[in-house]
Every structure is written in C-alpha cells, then in structure tokens.
Amino acid sequence: MEILYLSSLTERAIARHEVREIEQRHTVDGPRQDVTLDEEDDVVIIYNRVPKTASTSFTNIAYDLCAKNKYHVLHINTTKNNPVMSLQDQVRFVKNVTSWKEMKPGFYHGHVSYLDFAKFGVKKKPIYINVIRDPIERLVSYYYFLRFGDDYRPGLRRRKQGDKKTFDECVAAGGSDCAPEKLWLQIPFFCGHSSECWNVGSRWALEQAKYNLINEYFLVGVTEELEDFIMLLEAALPRFFRGATELYRTGKKSHLRKTTEKKLPTKETIAKLQQSEIWKMENEFYEFALEQFQFVRAHAVREKDGELYILAQNFFYEKIYPKSN
Image (cartoon, rainbow, N blue to C red; front, side, top):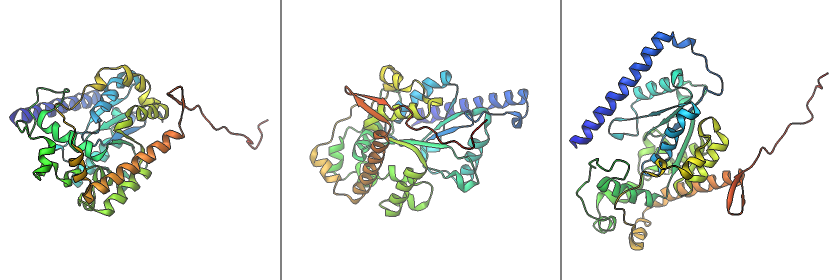
C-alpha cells in the first residue's frame, strides 16, 4: 500500500508541475482570452473509460499519436479512482474542459462516470466515446488484475497481491470480490452522477445508460472488436485518430497491457453468475451496445477478401438555388 501511495503522490506532483509550467507560459504569452482557436481545434474528446475493457491499450494509441496529430492528452486522476465527482469538482472539471484553450484540441481520459455538460450551461459539449466488454469477462479480468497485476507495470504491488484463490474458487465460496454485485459497473458508468445510477440492479439506471449511449456518445465500441472501433474513429475523427488503425495493428505499446495469471472460469461458474438479475441487466446493456456498434459499422464499412474497408463519402448536393451568375 505504501508503494501505491508514494506512486500516487509522485504522479500528482508531476501533474501540478506540468500545470504550473503551462500557466507560466500563459503568463508570458499573454491573457487567455487572446488565444483563438480554429473550429477544427476547438474540440474535446472525453473517454470515460470503464476499468478492464482494454482501456489502457486504446489510450496508449492516443498518447502515441498526440504529437504527430497535434493534440493534448490528459489523464483525469480521481482520488482512489472514485468514478463519482463531488458537485464542486464537477463544476471545476466542466470549467477546465471548456475554457482551458491551451489544451485544445484535447483528449481527456479517466475512470469517471458520464457527466452531462448541458446541466452546467455549456453550449458546445465535448465528444464522448467509450468501450465496453462482456460483463463476466470484465469481472474475471479485474479479479486477477487486483491479485497479479499486468505486464504494463509488472513491479507495482496490487491491492489483493498474495491471494492465490482462483475466480472459480471465489464464486464457489461466495466471496465478495466475485459476487454478482461486482458486475454492476458499466451501467452506472454510462448512467452518470445520479444516485439511482449506483443503486445496484436499478432498471431506471439501465434505461438511462441506454439513453445516454445513444444520445450522448459519439461512438461506443466493444473490447472484442477493438480494431473495428479504432478504424471507425479514424474515419470519422481523423483530427485525432489519423494513423490509429495502422498503429494498432503494428505497434508494440498498444498491446502492452495484459492481465497476468488470468484463468478462464468454468462453465459451472459462468452459469452460476448468469442466474443473477444483475448479470442479466449488465448483459442486456452489453448486448444493446454491441448491436448499436455493429449497426454503425455495417453502414460505414464494406468487407472484401476478408478485410474491412471504410466507405467513401456516399452523399452529394444538387438542385442548389438560387443559381449563381
């Protein structure tokens, strides 16, 4: 625990130093209101990443491309990875994201639940994206991650390090770390900051999460089809993701994070979890997201010889009046 605490202190000290450097440059360069942005640069993407959904693998691509594509990447580091911000922090965050012009175009990422910027009077809202995963696979991955870590930071001591119990043994013993309640995460992340979102098993939270996915998110992919998600982002948002597909296919950093010592659960373990109403709701949300993603993909790509190709522009303008002389 001490190693984790010192690491957190170090990361925060570095972050504060980077912010001070930006503010000092801002003081030298002139007042903030003098900073003008082209419409193409006045863009912010928020990736409120759900834990253990290949989020680090995807974020590494953003870091690898930011210098080349000329945008900023910022990690939202919340205390104890709490996904719910206090009301005052919500106000600070919205103000930072919308008015910090030196950081635009910006790509913000962190384990934070959805936040509705419209509630704060913001006219130009950020672009939300996300990735979700089969709920049982996500929980299994998280279970072993807490005990054995991953190959991204292999020397870091994890919270449950030393516990050798397998996921199957945990479920058989009725352990808390593998209880059905632990499946309740992707729904509240999309539902947001309302208290009902975090009420485990809430049907209202599920419907709100679905509503937000359709109406507030630009694109939501699935871990199992991450490459296609990246391909669609590159086609639709090249300002940020130009070169992302090739980097994902050939780069090394984007494939770094893999949970260590993970053992697949037995059919009996899976069947036991699937009896839970919580799994049924989380799986319903996952299937809903998967169907929506596949719908978007079907209208954006064509398959040829086993490869997917992005469709060229498929509309044009005609009958334009009045006629110019």
